[in-house]
Image 1 (tube, rainbow, N blue to C red):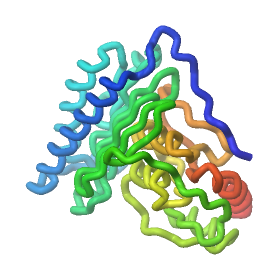
Image 2: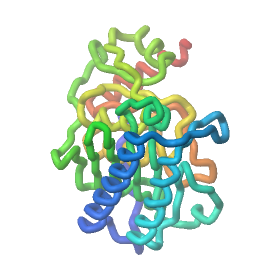
Image 3: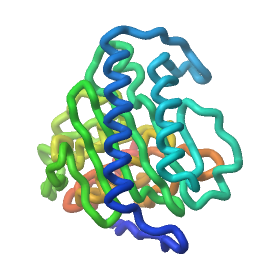
Image 4: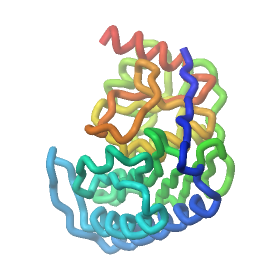
Length: 275
């Protein structure tokens, strides 16, 4: 069953303006240029909690974005993969959700599949997003109710309605399970989860999966991009994602274009019950 997204009331907070959207895109592009320069020069890296890698570029971009975004929307709280978290954000209706470099392992390995990801969340859902992949020079933007673009061109997810032959990407276990339900075309795993989801909006991927270890900063920007491009990103129970919870982590997810989503969701439910 297809789940239609709902938009929370904006209350006293106005919808994002064209000016704010432009400023966000410019800021994220500038942050991406900074990261790309460090990517080419080489940076130090280390391991943080849960065996997760981090680099000097992650930290530098995080500081830059914190300064710039806090000036753009001073009322918005802050949640970033590379900043200390705290309970103060839970009382905020607006929140910047940031991943300075989504796909750090790809960044460290010299790959192109990493991105700077930023979303403005309001009342639990993203209303403004910019996602920039500097190594491939792709800027994805989205405004709630205003559509999504890549490098200025409008985006629309694929219109395929059947699973047979669909291009699927995600963890191997998910693709194994789906392959038992239909003959799908398995794509290499994009190490940036945000980019993997965003490529559903471009039609390059028909079905994208995420395991049960994703966080708000991995998802919020790409979530808005795909929903504004006529696709769906939900839990495998069909629930729309909500952001700014006390623990900002999410269950396994599925993303597909609107016409394919019902079949993909039904297949995923059946496949994973059998697993």
